Length: 221
Image 1: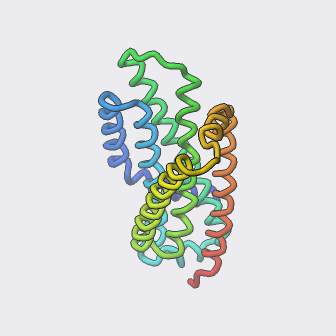
Image 2: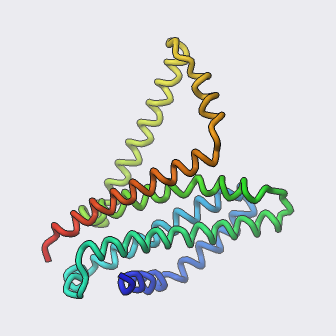
Image 3: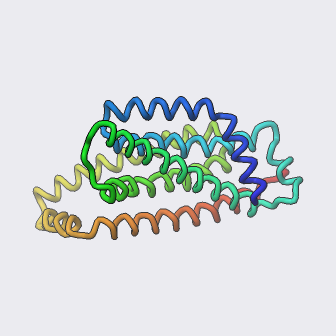
């Protein structure tokens, strides 16, 4: 598995010039936008970059070559998810460093733990992106995956809009105390919510890994 992770690191290192450009853009944006935006921006870029290794693996019948090595589908998938998780963590930490330096350079006062917890709340969302994209890419390929993700994004936006309309309707016409429910939710510990979100996203990532393993095992080489 270490060899596969090293392979992905080498593949990602070929995009170091692109990564440097992203870092430069992130630094520039950090002086003109909310500093917390940088963590979400750079983490998203990191998640997409580490997932490009799937395209490299599939290029020019790469999977048959990989499976001819002393590697099985389960090992390959475990290595891919481990690399994706670690890669995302590295990009997130770098983004946190950029945000910290920016806040100090701009002379903005901040609470370190509040900053960490606020940005940590973003991490589960990127884990879910990885959990979704890997099995979809393995099943349908990179090109179809892009179309499917656009459709999924549209469905998510539609559900969000419908949820807003339903909530507004219930607030006006229902006897349900929505304000009371919202107040109870706000009273919950922020740290507990973040930890719960992390646990749920990791469990979904593990479920995604099982699905990806099944997809990989069914492929013919």
